[in-house]
Amino acid sequence: GRALPPLAALSQVLRLERSRRTAIVFPLQKLERYLAPGTDTARFRLFQPGLAALQRAEALFRSDRGHPIDYVSSAVRMEHAPPLAPPEVCFIGRSNVGKSSLIRALFSLAPEVEVRVSKTPGHTKKINFFKVGKYFTLVDMPGYGYRAPRDFVEMVEAYLQERRNLKRTFLLVDGVVGLQKTDHIAIEMLEEFGIPYVMVLTKIDRASRGVLLKNVLEIQEFVKESTQGCFPQLFLVSSVEFSGVHLLRCFVAHVTGNLPTVEDS
Image (cartoon, rainbow, N blue to C red; front, top):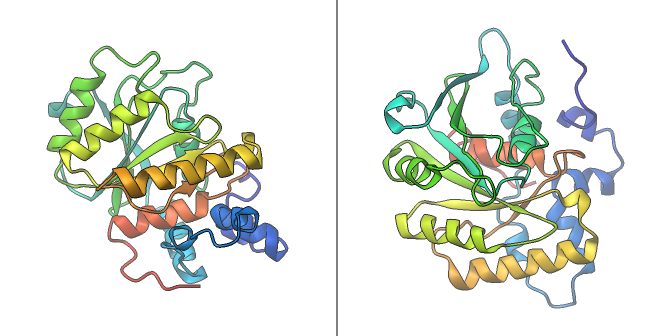
């Protein structure tokens, strides 16, 4: 098979020296030292799995003969969606937020899985379903905002309201620009429907430390003050450097019920 990208596997990360290792696995904690004294960082550590949990989660994202990971189908209407069998997680975000790149990074240990990544915003026009063995399905939604498919609202609202096996929605926000008007509309929709969700800041390798800190603190404050259904901890990711990807795999495994106990490190 193809060579794995650097740091795609936990075993590669564990060879790094400690501070670099922490920065890759827990990028939010890397920011802690730059915060003003007395800043509440409890929400930086709500989900802090130990090594065994991270390794168990990684095994779910590694395909083999008895555990195939594959694209299942695409749908533009709910009647075209696959059966409601395993638990599901879905990924939504603005066009060009880096959604397909993140899904490809999550599936990097199964290089046979084709996740098309385009330089053209709004490339995903359908709801795409990827089955991870018998354990869960990962769903890639069309991007909203610029170049969204014409029937985006119809498609996405129907999915969110009707998909009874949906365990968590991952709302991707550009780490460089922070929350935008279209993100607020998506948040209002999730809140209105009572859908549990989590916010993921993408492209953190492109943001300066100052910009990233500002966006993290502003979004955390927004989540605390203005949301009911959002998990209080933000997840920071870079699909290029694999920062936060291992932790996100672990959270997906956890919310789909495939990691019954998450012990602290």
